Image 1 (cartoon, helix red, strand yellow):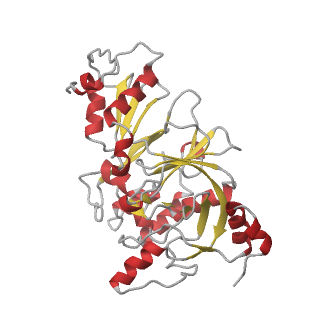
Image 2 (cartoon, rainbow, N blue to C red):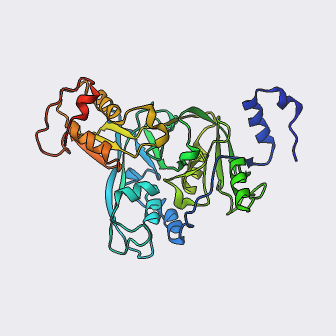
Image 3 (tube, rainbow, N blue to C red):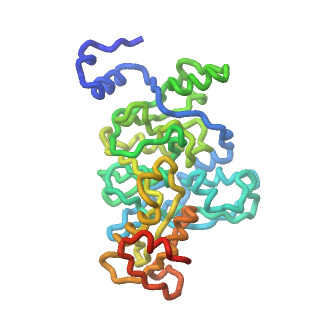
Length: 370
């Protein structure tokens, strides 16, 4: 065992921990929990390898997986498209990983398609069009309700990256706040947290003190520590669960995504953890879109969903004298399936919306009917 040098004990806790970690074997006690998702199929693993060499709508202009040109005057990246299943053994989850989509995203976009046997010839919607989250476009932004990470690399100001993630389940909710990355660890060992030890002991199945690097390690092969005790961005040995609320607070990524980010994300990068279940943004062609996701229960008291949505749309339209169908916003809040709805512009439904002069009175807004 490597003991902490005396000078480390005199340093502030955060700095001392970073230096101690750099001198010690990679052992991490994180917030990660186990999930019951089955192991990803060999088909998906091979598809993920091939995906890096393919040109698909999610990688326009030959950009690497998850990367898009950052629009100068708009808020939307990517495209929504449809594929046809060619392999009868491929699951919907396999397809999601190949196209840089998470579990909940693919499920909500294809409610009538079987997760495990979509079937050869089935059309599958790939919901890879995104409204950039309402946060400063710098560093890493993680939108918890959306189950997505956005990265604005400082050395590539015209690029934005986005990847599906898993976040903490309700009893181990990932906190909202601003932090930063500290150190990066390759092939980390894992020490199960105290809460997991207690639960396992109650089941009569205590976990090992340390899980070494390898296929049984829930951290995967890469971990990026945050400047919050016990919270990491890391890989996983259960990639089927990416895009769900399954962890004990940590941010999980597909192995290929965390490997890519690990190599390029500088230590000290700002990480902004937000909960924005509703987003509004302009497309390049002048269409105003909104998008709504299921709100996290633990954050429901922080804002009223409909009022928050109206404020966001109002902020996007305050410089334009346009008619907006607020009833569509209400429907989006009531059915938060992640689908993008065009409120105004070339891609909006061709109808004459009712002009609503909303003055901030929530009770009047609630009376709107679709």
